[in-house]
Amino acid sequence: MAKLLDGLKVLDFTWALSGPFCTMTLADLGARVIKVEVPESGEGFRRLPPFINGQSAYFTSMNRGKQGLTLDLKHPKAIELAKRLAAKVDIFVENFRPGVMPRLGLGYDDLSATNPGLIYLSVSGFGQTGPYANRPAFDVVVQALSGIMSINGQEGGEPTRVGTSIGDIVPGMYGAIGILAALYRRTITGKGCYIDVGMMDGLVAIIENAVMRYWATGENPAPIGSRHPVITPFQPYPTADGYVVIAVVNNELLWRRLCRVLGVPELPDRPEFATNDLRNQHVHALNEALSAQTRGKSTTHWMKALQEADIPCATVNTVADLFKDPQVQARNMLVEIEQPGMGRPVMPGTPIKARGYDDAITRPAPGIGEHTDLILSDLLGMSEEEVSALHVEGVL
Image 1: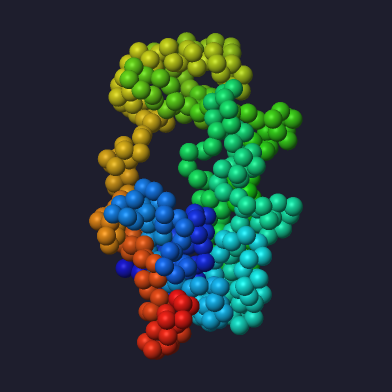
Image 2: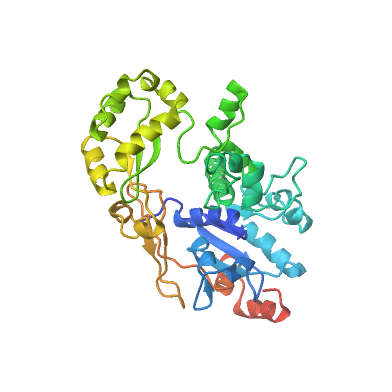
């Protein structure tokens, strides 16, 4: 079965997480992604744990489905090869600091001169412009600067990083969205374009109502734990053996139904709990009243009762729980991939399920330069002798 991006070719000069996550997404959707690494040692993130038989599981999970090519960009012949390859692809992705690729002669202006249909994405910490543009950045840096760290964590607690690297993943997603939008525009105009995505920009974009709350009230949002800033109840509550998450979204009938299920039908008639706004104002008193009920019985009991009443609820899954969650299994969201030398590691699947198109992920991450000879032969028509000579010269 075909994949959505079958036939598209991507030249991938990315490393770490933000760029590789973007190009991994394109590979999952069927694009031919050619990952470029330095010869012999490869990308530095190949040396991050955990390791399985000497291979980085971290690297493998972000680079599945790609082909591996090595180029030593300190060598003029490698730069020339990169330019020739860029003339043969649809998409070029890099996530070096601003200015690095243009200095090498591999900027958008250089490459689009010979490939006007090229879509070129740069992902960087702060984008290509502005006073922070040349600062180094990683996930924790942009989580801090974007404001997300200031609203995450327990009430009254210290600034807390979100537990997954959203500072990398979100701009990687926006990069993929930008590429797909540019592909659509190219079908109309025949022209490619340059896309500039900043990691900090990506996180500012997803702060959502915190910005509007500050603008509207003048009050600086602060950490409030797992509850919602404007919807109550909307958080985990303690049970006899764990927690149950309950979400009542501004629906008074649902609020009354919840109180009946919890055995406190009188709560909605108390003036301080009569509306969502009032419940927000008196959230601590409300949570004490609800927790007093939920603590009395098990999570299993409350999940059954709440689900029967059609009240949005959940257990708090651990990562280990995902491996046996029936919904995760039904949606093929944890997949095994045959990775040479590593066995069959399990990693997240793709959440993009397009009817009539294949969403299976079966291709492993490449070895360092694994497909170099194939790519140069296939895309550039180079002979075995020519490629061998480049290996000898240290270009590849």
